[in-house]
Image (cartoon, rainbow, N blue to C red; front, side):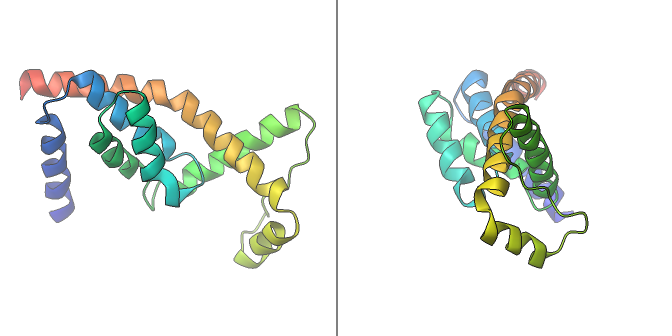
Length: 152
């Protein structure tokens, strides 16, 4: 019950901000979309900076990064690597495949021996997914905020 109550509390805090639904949606969408990038130490900073440049709500951007959490990040990053593989292979660039049976030893070996063949497609795929999902998150958050403000 505690997480549900905490989530409701923060949702109400965001809805009560004086910014427009457009500004809040930009912030939330930016934070959510940046979660596809495999750079977890930079998600909040990147989301806040990008939201500021887009004239969105910076605090909402920080909250939007919560879309990337321990349950969703592995899925996001696997999809990002898969998309990055497709992009790199379409241009004929070398790509290191993820091991069939995941182990940290195999991953560490690949990172230490061929870091760019693994990391660059992963980062590229993350930014491609970020660009694709941002408008979807924006529309979804904007509709939700408008609906909740109208009926709340």
